[in-house]
Image (tube, rainbow, N blue to C red):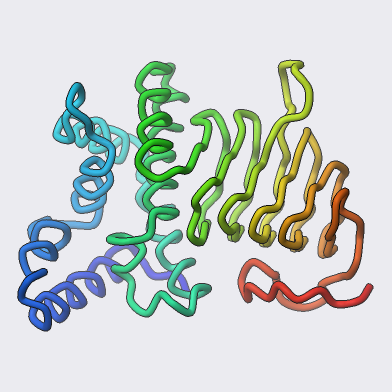
Length: 262
């Protein structure tokens, strides 16, 4: 269920008050992360910049860049809200809205990427690459700032995720740890996958080359995908082959990783 940014922020502040009251040791943590901020964009920039700052580029300077990007492109904030709702709706372990914001490195890495992507589009390549490196160092997630990601993205656990430069990921996509959307060959140009809306890519899957994965497809864990995958098609294996079809809900939304016979 998608919430407006204001609705999400209201839910998060209510949660922070409750959990901070229940666990006094964490009261200052909830205050600094959520309750001390006037709105969701301010809290988000504080939270992610704090993860990505370093000795040579302090978090406060990184935060200024985040503020600039969010003010210039409100879609960054809307996408972040959609990503939180995606985690809440699809991950049974996520039982309140603040969990992705505070604790899930998949969510945090994607929000850092969104700022890096905006910088890349503005021609600020050095700053974009700096953030890419810091995201990889902090979260073990490597997303090239030139890649294009939609909204409603859930990356569960996220360790070892790689998304290459020319990859395109649609809306409402779910991925798990150790997924690679990688290139094939040394040529320049479109060499990474294009992932349709509602696709589920399970743990350890490798999708390689300038191929298309259609809307609603499901890629089984550990698969190596080298050819196009049709819409609502399930593939598995090394190399991946069609093993089933999805006929009802988008697999990214229900996170059903079972393989049904074609």
